[in-house]
Length: 188
Image (cartoon, rainbow, N blue to C red):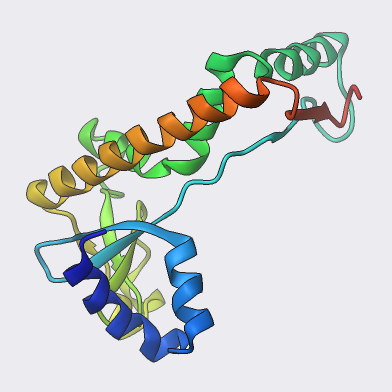
């Protein structure tokens, strides 16, 4: 994260969360990067975490068919494959790509990718839904992302994804599937 941007974010962030050394340490542990949008708001990107626990389930209302038992068993086994482990971790840690893709596809014109501004001043989060205006605090009114904002967000995500893929490669090289914990509430 750019040091100048980090300082600006911390100035705003400490007003809400505190400025003790442990608060600053928590900030540094939680956030990997940030991007400034055209409206002046700043989106903080949380550091990705390697997911090693996977639970699968099928069926409805506690009733499952033999087919569903088999599908759950296959999903558990498939997670132990490198490609599936990587895919699951990318999906878990980078949901922003999905928001941008839905917006690009015109997935739902009523729910474009937008910026929902939190009360923390300049710091904001992403939202893919618009509620009725009366549901928002006046400081949290969502605004649409511009194409420039989307490009900046995508570039930052690509940069963080590349770093995370290196971490996943190192993890897989060291442990493989030995540390993965997969289960299903149908088949243990």
